[in-house]
Amino acid sequence: MRIEKLFLAFLFLGVFLLAFVYITLGGLFYEQLKDFKGFIDTIRDFTVLNAILISLSASFVSTLIAFVFGVPLAYLLAREDFAGRSFLEGTLDIPMMIPHIVAGIALYCVFMRSGLIGAPLEKIGIIFTDTFLGIVVAMLFMSFPYLVNTAKEGFRSVDVRLENVARSLGASPWKVFREISFPLAFPSIFNGVVLCWARGISEFSAVLILAYFPKSAPILIYEKFTTFGLASSRPISVLLILICLLIFVFLRKPKGRKE
Amino acid sequence: MRKTATITLVVIVFVVLVAGIFVWQAGFSRKTLKVFHAGSLTVPFERLEERFEGRYSDVDVQRVSGGSVMLAREIVDVGERADVYASADYSLIPKLMYPKYANWTVMFARNEMVLAYNPEKSRYADEVNSKNWYNILRRKDVTFGFSNPNLDPCGYRTLIVIQLAELYYNDSKIFDDLILSNTAITISEDGGVYHVKTPENLKPNTAKLVIKPKSVELVALVEAGGLDYAFEYRSVAVQHNLKFVDLPKKIDLSSLSYAKFYRRVVVERADGKISIGKPIVYGLTVPRNAPNPKLGIEFVKLVLSEEGVKVFRECGQPPITPAIGIGDIPKELKPFIAFQSIQK
Image 1 (cartoon, each protein chain N blue to C red):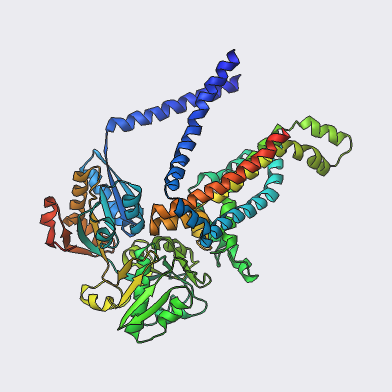
Image 2: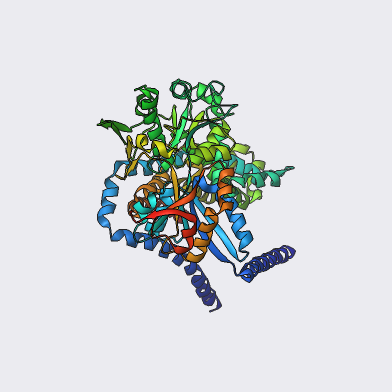
């Protein structure tokens, strides 16, 4: 009986945030329903589809990079206790805190054609300013902490004794990681991947400074809004939300099954 | 157990702190004055904000800076409410806001187009001048930039300057080399008037030409040395301590006496709106749906006062004195204004 009451109380509190999201997005969708033709026109617009595709794929690439480099880092931070670890963890949170425009300018200074990283790479034909790669770099910087932090918590929740037992039975560290730690932490890591990818798609300011072109979805939305007004930017937002919603609902499903 | 206690304590302290800030803020019961202004007005308006708040200690001035077109859209389309709207192109007020959201416009300041650069990092910075700038921009290793003409008046004004340069320097390839071969922008001539069209997708050759939504965003790139030259307003270059090529009066859109020459270039933007080349004149108004119209008018008074005029001069932006009004000017402002006509 007491649990029931608690459940009701939590439901009530939770609904508050759900309502927050549903009312906000519902308003957006409702307005769009009144202009269904505008929505259909948008779906057929190549520029719009291209921008959404760029956003989804650039964020996918940046998440992939964050995964390859971030999961090992998360494991280290979760397992090893070394001097300055908390300092390191603190610095990794910085990209989440600083204003995006500041991050954008800082990235620009390093990745521009005459920048510290941009200049040597330009010689071998890799250019970041106003290219797809630039979008990836901006997204990566802004969103990788979400993956690292979530994965780190995942590894921390894995019982060290399991790893120790495996090691004492003769498994190599890599085997322990591959067969014990990683699978057990996977739900968290996967969560981090989804967060990282989602955060990347929404990035605007940092991408704007580093790569205004090719136009990704948030930039196109901003431009349509400025040039033609709300009626023309809204359908793109609705389309982007719909596509992301589909992908996220799909991504969240297998995780539930595993548990 | 101790850990829980610590966390609880921290949370309590935090809640008390936040609540305290709320009460403290409310204690002032300050009125807010919302000012929407063009990005290029940021520095002078910042100083005016200080002075205004010094004079009215119960008022909190909140400035929103952005592209002039976008800010007008926020008022007209989104329903944002501002007490003052100041645009880098006075004609946007009648074009986008009349009659429902505004019915008067005051022209209060001018500006001019310059070519800004970084004396240490821009290529050929030591040779560039008002006679050879277009040849330097043509050089293969030089990059230049301007803001998106569909979004920012500074952008379409750049196109006008570059086409006027063709006529002024008597070199019919300047626009072709700088704009046509680097973007999807097109131009046609009809009876001595040049009609530039900027499609929505500008397709810039990004290895040579950098386009950003707002001209102010290019400043950071020039300062960093990633971009060699950027077309900017003079005031913006002065305020950011950039060096600039002072372009001839006949093409820099500053002088009322060359208004007829400026008109020879017309830009049609992606939304179909047309901007005719004309002197750069800043305009402001108090929108009709302003939450605090009285305070809005007070702020406009400060802009037009001797004090305001001085601020603009210091910021590298020539004020129009006395200011020029069109439309139904509120009577409180009439003492500051030279003449009005009923034309819109």
